[in-house]
Length: 251
Image 1 (cartoon, rainbow, N blue to C red):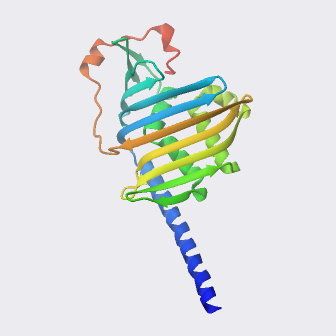
Image 2 (tube, rainbow, N blue to C red):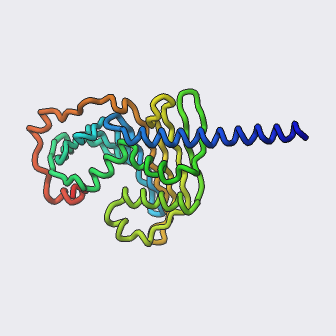
Image 3 (cartoon, helix red, strand yellow):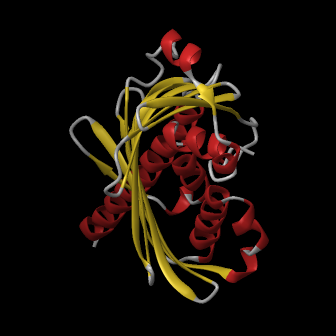
């Protein structure tokens, strides 16, 4: 009887230790992502719906203060696009010609680029469902994960989805319903900074089923001191055609 009680007591201690360890990793990971000031990232955005699928891959180097990004973007079978964002100016190369366009610091383009490159979207989910995350210890990393449809998780996922989709989604928020969230967030054991993240959100919008997946990989976080826009780009860039500016999400 005593042995049985000791065994149960030991299991409880292990369970408590596991919970405490998960809580510690979540806390340190949250603090670490808030500390990100610069780095390199590759972010893949996939959306599948009844009308087909889309995939965009953004890869680049960034600093947050000041906000400067050197970015390469590939979209489906289209040629790779090259971008620079320097505070309130967007530089984009099309057909080997550089163009420039002033952008608002509150534009959807700025918001999405900042949040995706610096893992802010993943951090929003990390903070929102921190008590529901499972922890796996790897060789040099920890992985925090969630796979389910709790009210809290779907609510947090909906906020992330809307924040990435912009004003149109905000206006139709009542017509968006999230049914499932799958989330993985891997951090370095020493720094607790992210190395990989994956967010998969299943939802319906205006009655149409869709799935959005955002996967990120991160390197050299807080090790990039400066990102420069080449002088040649700034001097030769032409004014962006007004007929196309409205499609760039620069407002």
